[in-house]
Amino acid sequence: MRILVVEDEPTLRAQLIEALRLATHTVEAAGDGETALHLGETEDFDAAILDLGLPVVDGLSVLRGWRAAGRGMPVMILTARGAWHEKVAGMDAGADDYLAKPFHMEELLARLRALLRRLGGQSSAEWQCGPIRLDTKQARALVDGQALTLTSHEFKILSLLMQRPGEVFSRTDLYEHIYPNDSERDSNTIEVFIGRLRRKLPPASIETVRGMGYRLIDTSAAS
Ligand code: CA
Image (cartoon, rainbow, N blue to C red; front, side, top):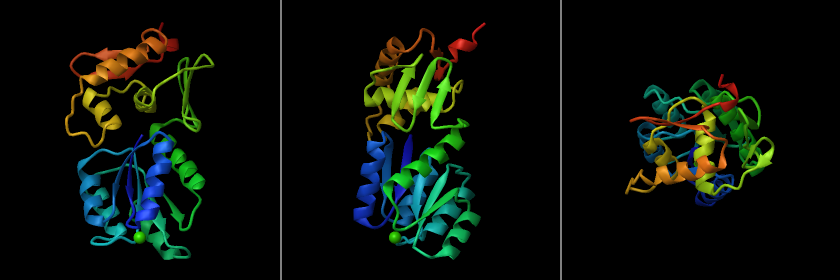
């Protein structure tokens, strides 16, 4: 998934980026509220982790700005310890969850998984589409119970498609999901990854929608 991290404290920001990348997410980060506001309004993210105490523009204003701009991604706010009023104000401003500092990275990752599940309409840590199962906790994919050997790019593409089975994702969507910072935008490479994924998945799992992109098909539902 594509996650936006907003934290002004450099050490914590680096720890968050590292933990999220290890959990196979694609991460973009901002260290102040103005950058965060701009990124959240102009780019697509599957979720955001937002510190409330930020320089330039404070976190609550960032969150209100995103929501006012129609950005509905799940947002987890990070609050100072004991600042219960911050949590209340944050939830009122449209936050989906909160975590008080200091926190354990495992808890943040577990809460993020829960947020992403709610977003994807998948109700557990394991996502299912026909014979394909995605274990979001262990970052692995299985077909009929057999684990697949996927590269990290292949896993990222499969997890985006599995987030909303049946929905069409353009090559640009997929490309931005795996290379958020690449300005080259050579989305032709996506065809290569899709081709490799197709060879590892049951036949006809990934459908090409001409001129639009790709979608995941529940092959067990075909009549
Ligand atoms: Ca801060």
